[in-house]
Amino acid sequence: MLAFIGFIVVTQIRQEWLIKRTLRIPSTRLDELAFVLREQERTRAALEAQVVELRGRMQDYERAAAEGRSAAAKLNRQLQEMRVLAGLTPLEGPGVVVELNDSTRAPRPGEDPNKTILHYTDIHAVVSELWAAGAEAVAINGERVVSSTGINCVGTTILCNTKRLAPPYLITSVGDAKKMLDFLRRPGGSLELLTSFDFPVKVTSRARVDVPAYRGTFRFDHTTAGGQE
View 1 (tube, rainbow, N blue to C red):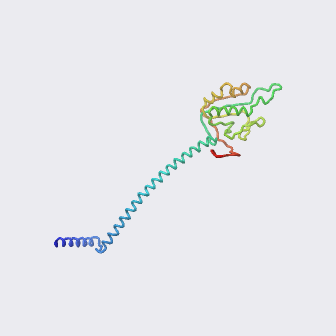
View 2 (cartoon, rainbow, N blue to C red):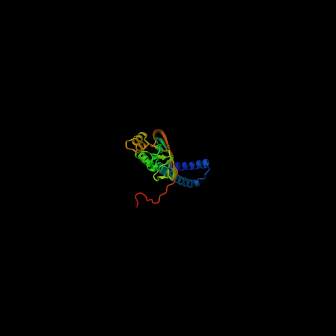
View 3 (tube, rainbow, N blue to C red):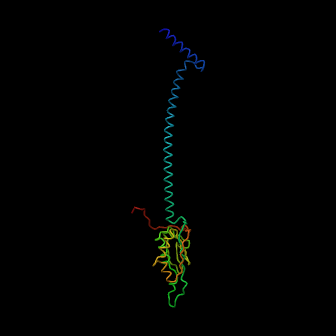
């Protein structure tokens, strides 16, 4: 037993001597260094846990940012669709062009001269039929027809979006050309009625029709939010 205890003591003395010789650290500071090492290990463990937490937060932020971009893209698409419906975006595509002009027939004796010129009701009828046939956009002599557009007569000219328009009237529309042509050429339609009164009417379908954006301003005297009174 005494030999064993002596062996342990000698071994400890040798280790302390080896540490002192190799690290040049007094044996009295070994306990202090061991304490510092344990504290550093605890600090490192805490930092590693914090890194894991921060990585988790970063993933949450990235996910939220991706969802935000997706929501923003959806809102942007809806905005663009609303701009198209409001007429604020120029459109191009297949469509139909209708050309109307005053009658070339001279008024008969005693006949009202107004019967040989186009009126706003004639233009309005053609535009309404184009909408009914599925037109996506309509313009009259380059003036985009929107929800607030008014078509009226001012003397021998027609007022559209506060702009005076004179014949010939070129009505352009974007949409299903065949469907619009069939509807415009149907018996009893507005074009057949104009033709019967000797008004020159020309209707053509085109692979590409350009309809400009609405250039005016919107003014509403009374507006309410949807679903509210």
